[in-house]
Amino acid sequence: MSGREHQSALAAAIDQNRRNERVTRAWLLAPALTIILAISILPLGITVVYSFLTPGTYGGVTWEFSTDSYVQFLFQRDIFDDTLVFNSAYVSIFLRSIGLALGATLGALILGFPTAYFIATKPREQRNIWLFLITLPFWTNLLIRTYAMLLIIRDEGIINIMLMKASIISSPLTILYTDTAVFIGLIYSFLPFMVLPIYASLEKLDFSLVEAGYDLYANRLKVLFHVIVPLAKPGIVAGCILVFIPGLGAYITPELLGGGKKLMIGNMIAMQFGASRNWPFGSAAALILMALVILVLLVNVLAARRGASGNG
Amino acid sequence: MADLSPATPASTQPRRRGRLARDLKAMPGFTATAWLCIVSLYLPILVLIAFSFNENRSVVLWTGFSLDWYAKALENDGIRNAAWVSVKIALFATVISTIAATMAALATTRTKKFAGQGLVYGIINQPLMIPEIVTAIATLSLFALVKKLTGLTGIGYLMLAHAAFCIPFAYMPIRARLETMTLTLEQAAADLYAPPLKVFTLVTLPLLGPGIVAGAMLAFVVSLDDVIITLMIAGPGETTLPIYILGAIRRGITPEINAVSTILVAVSVLLVMLLFLVQRRMQR
Image 1 (spheres, rainbow over the protein chains, first blue to last red):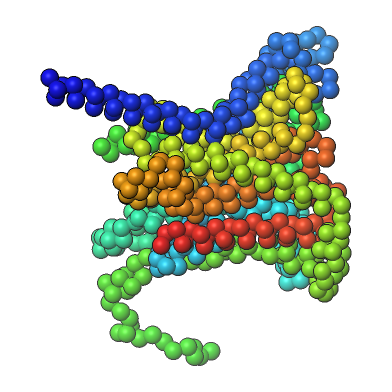
Image 2 (cartoon, each protein chain N blue to C red; image 1 turned 60 degrees about the vertical axis):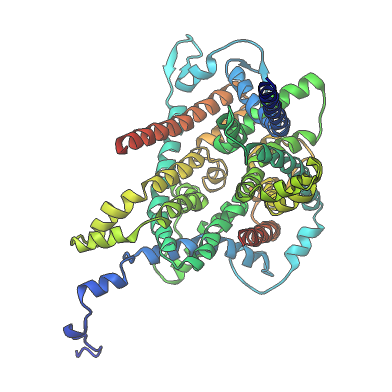
């Protein structure tokens, strides 16, 4: 009898304790979640609504339902007879952006993998210094780094002056305001994102497997591509995603190095909220960009899950 | 022509196994590529810094050392106002985001798995996962709506936007610190009849200190460096230093821009180096 009473009192106390813990947790989480929900997630909902409205004359929106923004993405309305004609202008901006982001990802991989490998094979106490050197540029202002790159690749920049002094070229190479400049700028901006995750997976690499490969008379290339790269795959995939996504949405790089003429998605979206005064279309373009990003992440998650179930 | 370089007799070459054991980890060209990466990551910034000290107006030809461009930049009212706006916003965003992140980290670590934990992580990290330009125009749309409905204007909007995207950066080191802390000391304090508030202020908070400092420094740097969100949201008179620099670059390149940029880079680098030291002490 008393034992049972004691037990139920204990259960009530544990229950009370759990409830208290839940209440405390809710209070602790409230500020962070409220700020992010209100300032970062709620606005995405508003963007969805705006993309279905009509542009206001001086920016903003008029509250009139319309799917024009999505139609405008693919078609142009003929001013005379109102028929829809396919318009490739915006699609080509998206394709250009995807191409540039993919190119930059590949470039960053080719440069970043050897760098990560180099750091991972350094003695343990030196690695932190190297990692610090790789991360430091990431914490300095992207705008300033891009401006610094602009100074270097200009017609009158250091690269051209040195090449001309060495008589390798007679007139300056035009790099600035071309796709090449945007491509270089994107690699330069996001290279640390490629190195760090690859390093994280190479750091754990068991070199007895590499030794086994050599013992079985594989040459260096074979060991690299059949032993090391497969083991570093999670890091490579993570690095590629971390470079591709910000590359796709880049704004500063094409703005400064592409001279505002070589548009990417980011600039196109910003323009709709500025000079073009078409907020609904800008909202629609932003949502399409976000859909692309989510698609990349989903493919990655699905591939990882299939990989995991395949191994297990 | 005679070959004067000493030839390597075949007999002195180490055996195959020995050579492999020595440079098992070597890959041809990898070291060179790594050095190329490090040099190209730093070279542009170093050139930028060097020419901020150039006596000439040129950002290409070096004529002599001078601090004129710094003096010019510090006298420039536009730059001074922008710097003040930047610091004001960064301080506000740092305080708000660090408090919110510390509370959230306390709620999400050292506890059993709870329902919705994944969702909570997702929400906290959301600002990191969405392209900044999307967050920028979405926030602009919200603020335009709120301004229209309430008529409120001011720098508060920009401060709140900064606080929001600083939260995940402040959260990361605080959570990492909490995860390595055991509950032993707090339990000992509680066993000695310290009330929960005292346990928190006298035990948990001092232990968590380095994590909070690291989180606050990251938040400050991230806020100070933001361009895209600020560019879209900032109203007149709310120009931050990076926005001022962007405008100046569009107007034409001068060493004055290099001087301001150098100051901004120096602040970020100093803070991050301090952070590196704090974290090394944390590991010990």
